[in-house]
Image (spheres, rainbow, N blue to C red):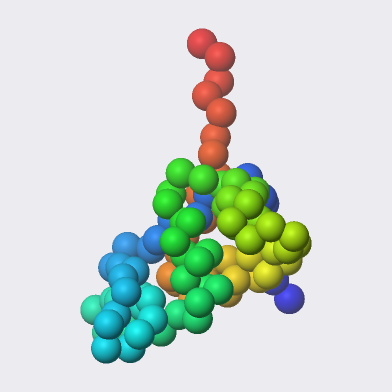
Length: 100
């Protein structure tokens, strides 16, 4: 069983991966040196919000604003856990500076 994510973690696309629209596939894909991962529409929506700046809570809030009336928290967290396990994204903790 996977451990719960810290909702203050900030996901970013892992090195060697690039997301783009692939006309031939008619979907968004993750490209990497060894191949390509086709993304579903919902996976692409989540990946489009992963910018290395917003934490998981902020990403969920943006998606729930874009798709009102939907509680997307569990689906987004499940996808982010899967994407991290597959090496598509990395999670970073925002650290606060110590007072000087």
